[in-house]
Length: 341
Picture (spheres, rainbow, N blue to C red):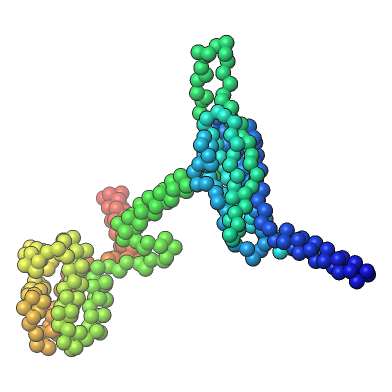
């Protein structure tokens, strides 16, 4: 008798545990709604909650655009999942719906596929009411409300403000660069500029540098004569105020020929320019003596046509001496006039 009782008790416990375990493994679906009564065109949100085992793969069947006739799906939010006790998985998903027909709707149940099983939720009721109308004055209509102006937020104008400031900065920078370049000054204002040498000193300095490069000794005749003639052309621009950089050799010679100060070195300049044209355009290879003669004539042309700048102190001293002599002469004349016969 005791043995039979123990067997029955063991059987009951086994069935209870098995049944509880099977119940714990079931997938559950629940649905809730924010508002069960809305006006035409208003929106409300459905909340789906699916509870299942963590290892299970379930599929939620959500309508894409229409929940049922008269009820539209506006947006389906992405599901959010979390793990709770007993390794159970809770999936939550929201659905935004609306309706444009007044009626009382019994929303269809939502379905979840769990393997070979299909689980349904309960059904909800949704009442959609039309906008109330004043029956006493059915022809009275209300105008559309005025457009609301958004509040002033400074951050909304940041792109415009920064854009204007950047444009002003670029314009100022462009004007600054143009003026600095036109005045032939350094772009950097804090950079100390070297004092500009007189035209003849600058030209002589460049000729010294060309001579030290020993270009024609390396067979670089074209580069040698190009540097010499460019140096002479720049010198003539400052010295004679002529556009020598854009003039041909014959035009330069015609201009220099009319300058009385350069008549003595006209032939020297002619030798340089003509030989330079032969080297650059006819690929002539001058003799070493001709190369040395071109450099010597370049030095001679600059030295014979240069204008020496008189220091300010010397000019002031000469003017002071002239003034002193004039004062002495005036005194002598006055003494002669005052002296009695």
